[in-house]
Image 1 (cartoon, rainbow, N blue to C red):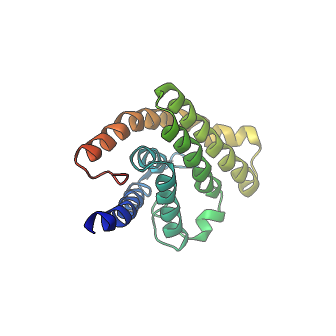
Image 2: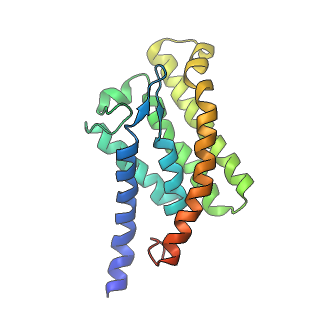
Image 3: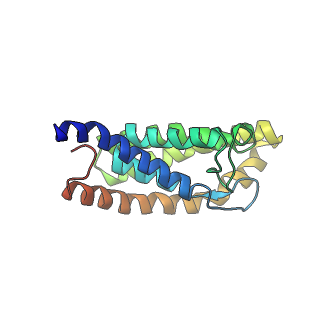
Length: 184
């Protein structure tokens, strides 16, 4: 009986834990212009490795909903619908397809090179959503928006991808060895 309860409750608890980690690290941002450097995408990638694409994406959606209701979990300790509809809201939305694209590939393919490419593609999709929304909201031309909102972030986002590719499988392996992985 305890195993059945654990199999239903424990994955939900792990999803909530990853959402909580996003709530802690997401607001910690480095303002470098209209779009800050955030740790949110790093935590999303870790969640995908640890929980799989469905629960990893769900943990991000929970984080996003917490921010939408006004809790200060978005970059710069902000929250609310104003943040979502503001100039950087497209990036918040763009994290959803990023998580789905990268997560499905991480789940289905063990080739690290392909996983890397999937995370880069997912990040590019997030950039596309965010930059398009930024152009509409802030009235910038695409070239100017790219120079402010994308190009400065590429090195850091590549570093976050590499960090998650190293740390994510190690954390998942340790959880599995301890019998604490939600899939067990």
